[in-house]
Length: 241
Image (cartoon, rainbow, N blue to C red; front, side, top):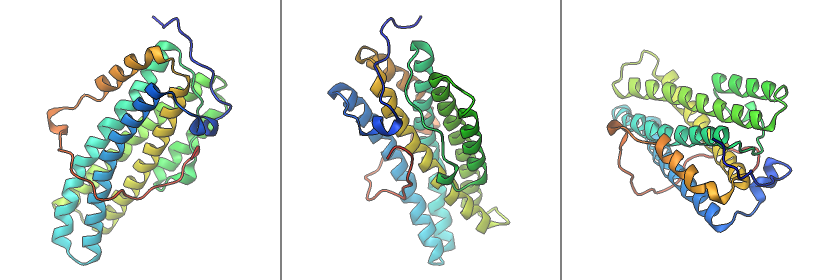
């Protein structure tokens, strides 16, 4: 049953939402979610950067050992990111939340599959006249992209780790491109979250946080410990920033 409280008025655009001020409780939820995602992404990015640097220095064995860690870290990031995206979709469907949503830009992605998905999303955005359907479609597309990118990344990283690939150069290019596109999906999800919180009634914040927790429940195999982070990885520009 939908909550009787309607969504709050939204800004004119996603860019307006991104610049908008959030009340304290919403701001705390936003920064908490972003911090957790950034920590998971930074662990993946730092580990992959180290593996790539070792390879460029000619330390093949050490680079394969280093890249072996990235598969599990990618799984952790994917679990948290898809959990947030599923929670956004579930809450919007149940409560009728109607945030702004900007179409994905294929130019922000490197991989051919991700670019195709972004172009298709943009195409469908023109025929989905309902703002709510545009939002749900974007969230669904991002979730599918994250799962697909993570699958490709982990397959390539696992092959490199056991030195089982007949085309290691291609596999290194795969993990680098998939990592870049996962980062783009993460940035898009953060902007989507901000627009969502803009129109979310504060009375629904608790329900939303519970949904995020439920959708992000880890399995026993998904629990690599968080480490102290030295630096963040590469970033990409996205609509709204």
